[in-house]
Amino acid sequence: MQQGTQQSPSQEPVSHTPSGPPVEEGEVRDVTIETVGDQGDGIAKVERGYVVIVSGAQPGDEPTIEIEQVQENVAFASIVDSDPRAL
Image 1 (cartoon, rainbow, N blue to C red):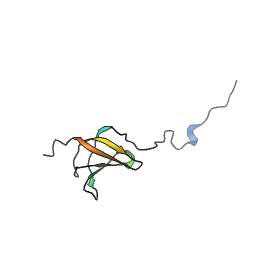
Image 2: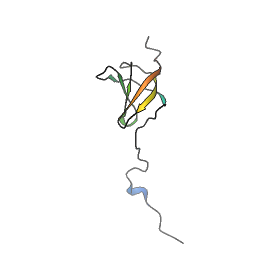
Image 3: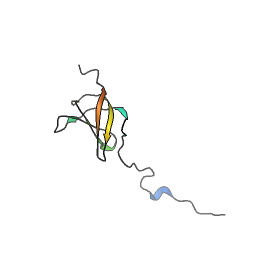
Image 4: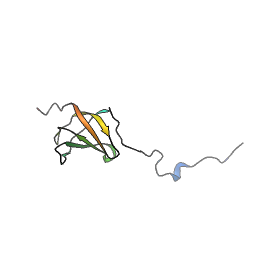
């Protein structure tokens, strides 16, 4: 009979600490392009400020994208469905 073996989570700053990128290769999601990078590609930010670079996108676009490559600090994606407002 063990008593007093409870561990108090109050000492932990966050019980679920996110680790790694918040996106996965093959993931499809909607984003908003905030700016354009040095190479002319659109840049969107998702959870925790993680950067997603979207080829061919412009600021203000809201495309549906597919994540193609994921790195520790940035992901690269392509547009699978353009913003219907961008004609």
